[in-house]
Image (cartoon, rainbow, N blue to C red; front, top):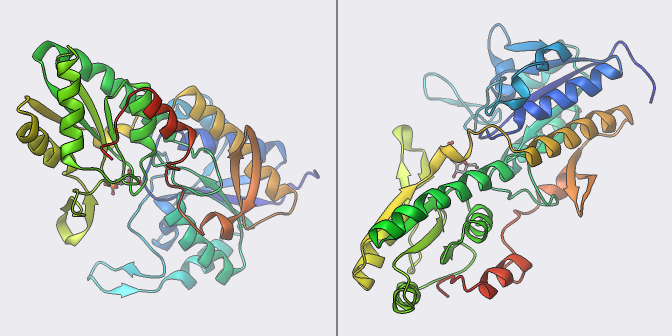
Length: 362
Ligand code: F6P
């Protein structure tokens, strides 16, 4: 790889934050500086460039000497509600600002862009880079782990650790009070966090959007546990699970934006009714996103951040760095955004959970 002292690349974080984003930045900045490149970090998702003056900062290796790589969140800020093709202006009007954004990148002398995002962000970004003929490499991140073509996305491991620890903390209270404890975890449309933390945290029931269930089956499982002599039960439910008749549980926020929420409470009532057992509900929410990254997430962030820069050095673009079968690879962004990585219900995790006696309510 040749040294090129002229090159300036940009990096930004897009979509919901998670643990490990700063560690990706650190890896990319250190590798880029090794090649003599300058890295600028665009603030607040790419939309920081649409502000006047544009919001960005020069990222230097020394910025990452101390605490930053250990921190959750993103030092650049991010957004999951700004689309340059349909940008909401302060007066509420919707404007296509994609040309402005492309021009802002070019004006800054940025040759290539590394975007750390999830499938939603990549879809928008690939439209943008096609239109502007920008060089782009994507780094997958999301606690949901639903990005296609990578076994793991940055942030997922930390979220699962937080959810597993929550089950560890709920179990003593469940046992002390003879209760059914329901833990509602995140996962927009995919049940990975619920499934993995449920196995790791000793859940009795795991509910994921990929597997339909009935309240009767849940009640049977809980009654059986009590008949067998145990006084408590642990249930993990993914936020995207619907009621047995297909109703979504959502919260409507100011401005009409909706987010999943409420399925845990629904189940709490239904399970108590069907079993007669005292039931309590814990909604884990954004606690899953904010932690210091686990070593697995720091390692993945480092591997993917370095690889992203090296792909640019090789002249490659339109690629997403990925982790597949124990190795770092790169795949075409257009293939990565074709579908969402949901739980494989014939896969090893579901099989193992069933072998452990965990019920899915099916
Ligand atoms: O996609 C990540 C995620 O944390 C989902 O698990 C969750 O449904 C959603 O984002 C929450 O979004 P927000 O941060 O906008 O509330």
